[in-house]
Image (cartoon, rainbow, N blue to C red; front, side, top):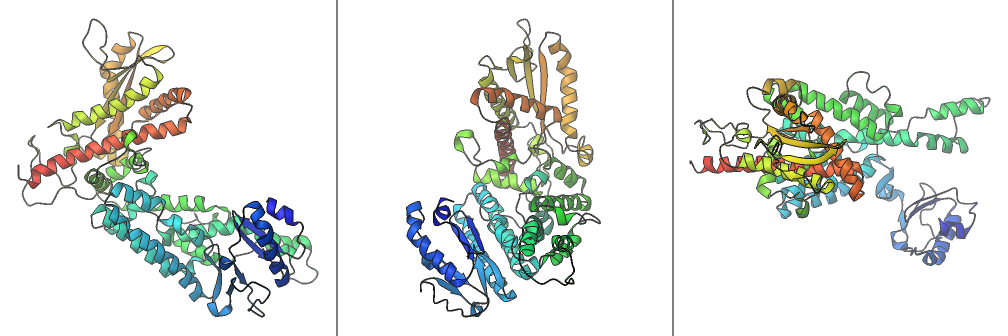
Length: 538
């Protein structure tokens, strides 16, 4: 840092740390007070204007009036119960830790409770997950032992659950809440519980700082329980095995959340690695404890790659990523397994004559009315636009040949791979029909894979005989794409990236977000259309 370089060596300062414009210094009082004065003088030359009223000085013993420092500098004394650094309690009594974290949670909860004023559940969920969720506490749960703030973390989780109930306009059962706290890639909403994630965060912090802590202890004169004859090598080995206060309690908590033997290597893992173990453990527990075949099929479907892309898509009108309030609420309830049709002792029938179930399974595959075709066409339009970027000769509904009116694909590309023309045929399959629900409960994507085979049998040989390629692209109603379809989307992304210079991974995400939003948007519209009939008795 140029400012510190200009000041020169500071032999009396034992430690100096900077995080952006926040600095922390440890040393004799006179040395730290002198450094503060120098920063006030030289700081403005480098754009750093010191706000002494926000500076804090602390030492756990001795005269705590700190007469060497300007009067506006805050004195952290034993009377206050402890000290904070960068917004997190650093040391003090258990009551001080609890009080400090409680204040932080009160501020977060106040912001969370204001989300409902937006009256836009799509935006509310984005903000709740990305701005007002666990991320607001992460720096605290990485520095404070979990056992000191258990009650405060549970209070945070309760309010987080209340916010989900508010934005979903639904009562959230324990089972639904457990699903919602899973990451999106595992079928949840990404609303992590602080009480469950805190041990992973604290242990990850301990593991990442253990080497630094060991070096600091080796360089100081802190007493050890070894004899005076203990060698430096023996001392270094023992320091490398130090246990940070609160670490054992967190490891004990994690042992109750993880299957046997999975906690053995936690001492070497990062927070992310430990959290992944917790996520997978919770996901397997939910899947194994679900007795319903339908729920098993649903959980399988929403845990597949990119099936939750509509939840990650930032609302953007120009990209077609905005869902109406009603559409998003229906889509959210479908994902969480919450009934979308009112329970009634009387059988409610669809215009096609079939009974409408409370989860809308029949509705999502019903061909009565125009919405199923519109859903299909909306997905085709997205694919067509990306293929058009690669080749202006791409067309919709291209005939098989000049001598035939058969259309084997929804989109035609004249030169897709290896100089061959390509026909792309998109289809949406309902994984909750009687024909597929059992297979989908044991294998995710079973309906999509079966649809792919069916399309190949119907068109592939005829298309390939003309020198073209046939690509069936099958997606299930809850967003599961066949494995082959996922690979084709990657190829389309690679070809598009050559022209627009964006990373392939970003284009893959863009395609899936647009496809997923359109799919769930029309799923919701199909439900809302039938719900109108049910509510009005038509």
